[in-house]
Image (cartoon, helix red, strand yellow):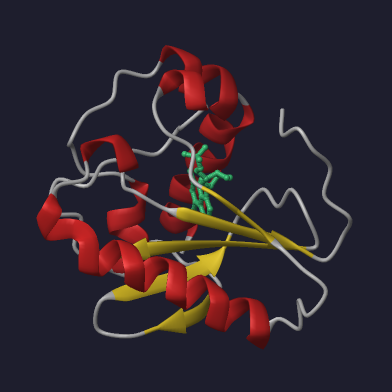
Length: 143
Ligand code: TR5
């Protein structure tokens, strides 16, 4: 419907300055765009899903493969800096899922995992997510 197109367009517009927004963002535990992706209220290209984890293609890919791996239940885990002992299992599962998807994507020669945290880490969405990047030569140091 056209209503849906308008909603999507507003999200795309807000993304144009997402990195600047990240620098100004106030970290919070409010619902994020990822809740809508989890609930399928906003479409995404899902590459992996189980009862705990969802993985989908980043809308603004920084490499030929750029996938976000997130917990379906945030449980206060807005970012890695908010991790508590109770999150250890889901944190391990996010990384293990990244490995499975890297294999699925054919990234046999290597890939990169990134977790941005907080304004200085350039985090823009406060629902923890692991970036899986691959399909090109990565450089170091990261920007
Ligand atoms: O900047 P951080 O590390 O917080 O990563 C957030 C990531 O979410 C960025 O790489 C964005 O490109 C990505 N992103 C943002 C939106 C979005 C998305 N990936 C898939 N689908 C998305 N929708 C529908 N809307 C977004 N605002």
